[in-house]
Length: 257
Image (cartoon, rainbow, N blue to C red; front, side, top):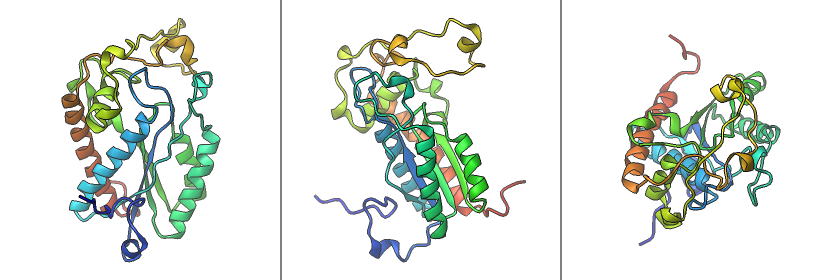
């Protein structure tokens, strides 16, 4: 049975549908292409970013908040994994150039609200958003990290940082056919910095991934299952959908209380 194009997914819809819609909010899923332990696909972050954005947009449309989900950006900042085969890096300066071009064209077309749905811990858009504001003060740009929208501790025994229980369970729910059996996964053991400030997190630096972890994972995936993944994904997307709706209906001239 053929599937109808979803009108809130730009890659699937068409000019006949788009030309009569007054979209106010664009949603940009942003991931990365990188190794995720032995058992998860390189596109893990892209799969999740896109799925969260689309599911939340579907919910928002039910409240007549007609946001449009743009195609996913599949490359993230992976400067610490340059020696990991086929981990593909996009520098922050390149990300900003791409983001600036997209913001520019959206502004020309009257879409002055842009939400980045980020699924990669190495991406950080805060300073880019500040710089964009100086160039396009009429455009409201914001970014959310999908995994932070609700407390993962309520759903997982050990969420993990990268390819651990949280990400594994979510991919088990979304694309189970792409997950290897967990007895083929590494345990995700990761070393930490020796220096106290770096270990405690109030000093930041780039980790050299191959010196931190042998299997590219950070966090043990062994307790993951698709049921946990579904519960977490559903809770996240409901909360993100509410944000989409609120931003859609909020006047940019009346953002503060």
